[in-house]
Length: 352
Length: 78
Image (cartoon, rainbow over all chains, first blue to last red; front, side, top):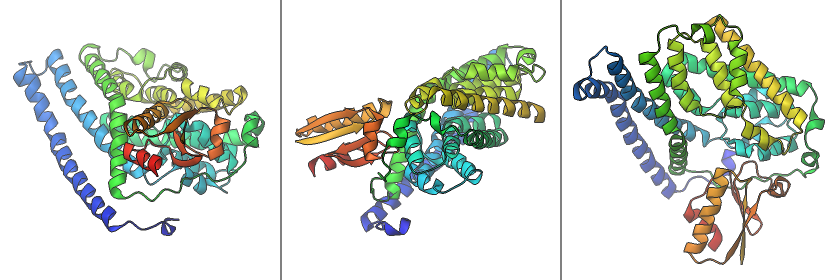
């Protein structure tokens, strides 16, 4: 479909080259800043403030001064890259890709596309209607709707920045598996009659706006706009979360939490999920706290399960989906996803 | 007089789009009536797959993003 669109004009090509140059300069500045944080944090904490290295307060302050700029820089840089990549996807295109896909392959494709397609939970209803009208099976549609919020870009970057790439990759894989399996289960249950009737009565058609293919300048501009929006929304939570994490690091005794949040407490995974569902918190603020809790004996599976429940199942989204789904189907959706998260939590606790 | 519709259920982006449209209309002294469409069954007349959507004289011009003021002005003065 790319070929049928008009090719970029000379002017937009020049604008694209300028935009690339700007992004390259920004990337160099970003790298320079990123490598300068650690010495700067140490100098501020131990030099300027005169705190003793190795003391509770000194360690906590140095940790805070290092982690805040590091995470904020990571968030800005990576969200920008992710947003740019996402500009190549659109809900309309995803729908076209998913048309005619069957159970299994369709669920895998839907879950993966759910990760890369730009999505906001306020668009869940038009997207749901658009998918169902296009004849995409209910289970495949759900795989998309589960993966899109669950594999959250802010959570992914925070996990990478704080725990490293292994945990970030585990989170991504876990999210994809839950979305895929939960979608297959919901598809098998044949719940079509629990979709509100008006959805089936709407007339099909293609409403895509015939927009020109955006040039690089426009892609970068849009990506920057969404980066500013996302980082603007979460930065305060990040700072507070890291401050709380730093305090826990400095002052809570080692292994203090092993009994309640450790592997040996079998009930902690379902309890974490039950606590996470009604919580509509921000993954950005939770992750630094979670990291500090883990250093004091909490288990990774428990902590990841809690986080996934927070981002994947939120009350506002349920209320939005109520417009197209009957309560029974919403209950099944929440139940299946929550069960999946609990199982993943146990699996991580077993494996790691 | 132009008829402009903002399609959206009341999410943050939908409100921001509406504000931006009002700003463009008042700053450039355009004659336009601005309507909000919050009912999904009605919204789906335009087959949108992401909110907010912007409709000018019954034609869908943008979905799933907040266009710039210049873009909006372009559609309104065409």
